[in-house]
Image 1 (cartoon, rainbow, N blue to C red):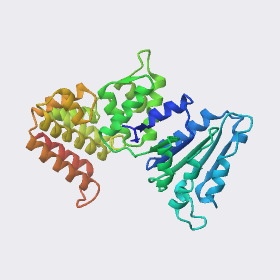
Image 2: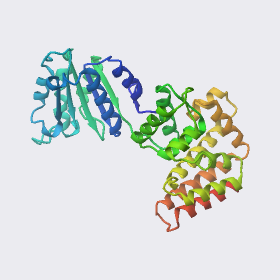
Image 3: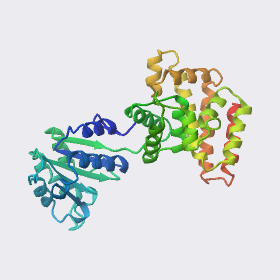
Image 4: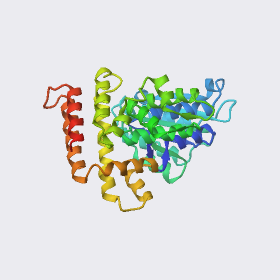
Length: 352
């Protein structure tokens, strides 16, 4: 799922901004810089025309701020021949460094502006790479309900990437099946910028049904619809050794398009879900879906079918082997080729 904090998601916030439902203050902070950059850009583009930006857009970098009160003064100015002005404080994590002042203390001075912000100003605070330290300022924004505080978390591997991709596809008015979703998520990984870019590309190419298919991905992104992590998962779930090793051989011949680290991550996610399924298998489908963190009943059915061939004990052993393979493939405790390690892992899984 896209980064989510304080009940605000990236997509919901982006939709509000695109609909020109603005707040006086936006605090955008966290590890994932892509979300922060895109939201800042959306605010500027939707709040001001190109002509209005000459007089009504002020961008300040934290490292250049000698006195945070100067930023407050900018925010208190009225727009020139426009209904709004936008003040952007970029790299807020560096505020105070110019005069060796405490970052948190300097940012907390902004609480005085947040107590009564100007309605005609949109003030955007961007704090990349970490959580913002001005707690008093942030608390004032929340308490007075004068803005949005959005924490931009970096996507983790596995299901989180698939959920983020699925939500973005839906936001574009398209649909995507499980195989196509797994293909794009496992190939791109947690690079959210590339993930959204590839989906944007596919959106332009979809037919009248607005459906993203494996064939569309294969033609335009270069991922094989027959030899990919989704098909490997399916082969292993059915203990189809012939198909599994055909896919591994294809991976060995195309290492750049099929990095071992992505395949290992997929396997960990799959067998972790199998283990979860075993612990909740007597509950309703809705409860199983919630426990697995998926909205796909198809996914639950496929996991249930695989659970017949892999016991709880087998899943525990397999997860242990996957962890070992992951460590060794990164050069820790082994000089063995990563493809050989993956082939050995697949053999162990098929015989678990």
